[in-house]
Amino acid sequence: MASPSYSEDLNCPLCLSLFNSAVVLPCGHSFCSPCITEALGSQQQCPLCRSAVAAGEAKCLPANLILKSLVEKAQREEQAAKAAGMCPEHEEKFKLFCLTDLQLACIICRDGEKHEGHRFKPIKEAAQSLRTDLEMFLQSVAEDINVMEQLAKAQQENLRVTGERSKQLMVQIGRQFQEMHQFLRKREDEIKNELKCQEADGVEKMKEALTTMETALCQSKDLESKAASVLKITDPEKFLRKWTEGGSTMTRESLKNNAC
Image (cartoon, rainbow, N blue to C red):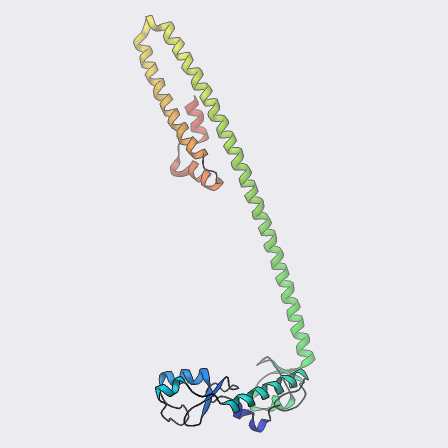
């Protein structure tokens, strides 16, 4: 694992983390490739010694293969140490959990500057506390899921009921118009018979009555046409909105009035 004596030398001076694709400037200083690329975008000089870096050089900086190798080795050692439950920096067994940084720590880590003022718990106690929090969270999520499922079922039932009501309304409207047609045909026949019987006595009055009836018939047919266009709408919501929009006269009461 990386010894504390040189572990800091494996950190980029800009991001203060282990080198990521380390590259070296002409002046000899090394940085992460992403870090120095961003730094040279605003100023063409080394962030440490202020040595000038030509634009051509900045585009093709050589990799620092030695640093790359050391970083990879340190990372392997760190992973091995963590797998063994050991602090890779101090070679001490992890016994604490830093509640501030949310990471495992050894006794030496706790007293170091990096964790100054932080809160710690023994690993077993911290794990049990976190386990309890997770169990409560899962219980809360399960309750939320149950509520959402109930709401979804209720919504599906509302959609089903709305669809059934729409079908019933369409059947009812169709029946009412059929009855209205029968009434109009019957009334037309009655008027014609009356005209024939009373033609000699009051042709003029019968003509006026016929005109009135034809007007009513025309209005009824217009109403029929409008209603038929509404019946062609298959979407229940659009159907009901079209039927009632703009204070439409095509209401159940108006149909009865027209029929009378």
